[in-house]
Length: 298
Length: 172
Image (tube, rainbow over all chains, first blue to last red; front, side):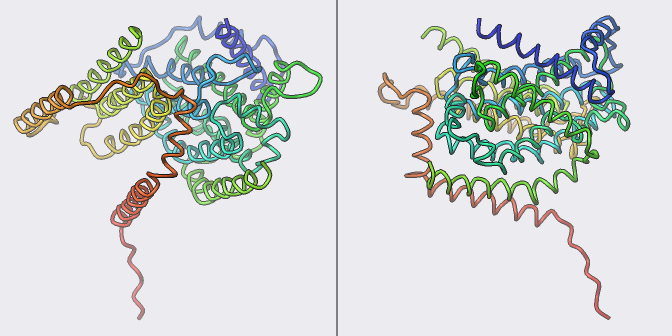
């Protein structure tokens, strides 16, 4: 029952993200747009490239969707609305989201097309840039909660949200999760103007629909993870917990989409230099500061 | 208990099967990702054995490592797609003998070593994580620090060897 409810909520969230994305990029607010686009995609022929690696080609989009869904299993929307409160929850989110990379590599390599393949390998370069900036801020969050349980992480922020307690970690995690969800300005792997869609280039019809759904679920999952780690999860005055979760998650997703709109695209090689020269030292400083704070003001 | 045994067996067989696939394909990316799924199956075995932290860690680490290995295999192999007719196996007799001997040795170790009594009670997953953390920062700290520094040193050394020396301008 919980599982079904959370999957339905995820799909509703993904739909809302699709509406927001269209609104932000075209300037038109149209509630029916994703539905119509989805029906159009399902109605189209799903072409097969001439010499595909069939297994990779088919598994890629499904694995993308699956990794987003798996990561969502350990995210609490209310104290009780969680599919699996794993003892290694914070680590599990990361483990599930690494398979986004595997999915994009498969989807890039599978169709035997140059653009798709370049897109897939670009994401590998991007992963080497952002991966540490996902893990290290989560480490600092777990240090404060003294637990990897995601519910415990939310409870640890009862007095003060982590966005205030460790703002540096929040900024790094926010940027890294935008890179993980290949949102603009980190969307070189599906760059429309340059690679004709990159990883998406050879997909059509229902396969493309699954791929796009997977990406939307990924965005909403990452927004939810940001809320759990930094914005106090379900906590808030007056409104019931589920309402706070929903409001915060949608606000974070909207901020992610809006922030990307006003940035120039960043090539993965440049992102790599920025992340390793500036990002990782900052993440280490964040861990140090949080360590001192945890010891001094528990 | 039965379900647990079933899943341990299932993921074990899956791990072995993906291990075989590694050598049965000529596509470098398929080979690397088959190795990844073999390792993921091992992680799932850890999960079935209720070693949650180890399982999740294994599943997480291997995805990145094997993907990076895939790009290196694509870069350095002559026919990364495996679409040509080139035979990429070599030293078949030696590998057959080595494989067979190691298999027999592993079976002998598994059967004849006295593994002690089966544990009847064990800490829950959260306690396991706490215990592991204390172990890493207490008794085993020196070992892990040594290993970490050794790996870091070899990484720096390997990079230093790989970089092409920059020719400096001779002063006239």
